[in-house]
Image 1: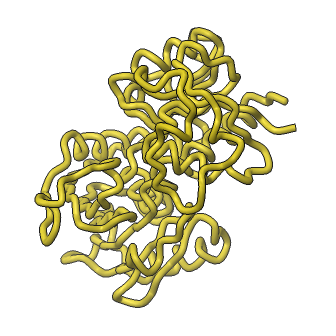
Image 2 (image 1 turned 180 degrees about the vertical axis):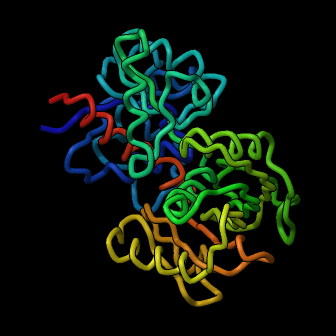
Length: 325
């Protein structure tokens, strides 16, 4: 019997990706769709600007859009803007709905887990400190996901003192219609409002880290795929071969999570990132300017592992953690 859920922010870019990824999911089924007030009562198929491949699933095309206050499902994936999520998610949690949020509204709340299941599933225990009958858990910022997946294994090699980060972030991360073509064609935009602070703070919450992070973010004319370049300063000398061997092992043991690229011109968003790709693509491992510095690239699909796919994995993991049937 499938777990029936609500999807908040169903007409947006991330909401559409959630729909596409759950279309044939063996465990989860969408039964309620939530959108902005202007679309409440309308059929989903009449007001969504469908951007995903293929057609809108028949089971959802004629489904009437709801206001969030009408949700009855036990679980909901939220792809709402942060300012709306702040109100809607706590309302639903008070009514007994478990929220898996892609929004930033509650990421800094000390009793709300900020989770990548393969990295810090122990944070699910924080939900026991929440006073509402429904629980809220959050996904990280899209670039934080790929930074954290890149850094988490490195903590096993040596202590980390500092990480310098530069991101090249895809246009789809800004939603649709996103960044003006006049601003981005043949150009890079060397800032994304609030993004650097999110990366620097969230990665440390996820990793339980006491090291410092400096981030510079850029919007680039790429459709899908965030590239996160990092230079990691360790507390001892670390040779690039140690890092390469580690990721070779991870790629072999966990191919659904990591893909190591040894070609010096890979990975690339256009060549390596697939439509429903949940992996961190690791490459460009190189020695830094000092013996205790190693540089590498972690690339992934910002709408999948960085948003919709992350929410689905967290929904599955939370459901298992709560031990619900």
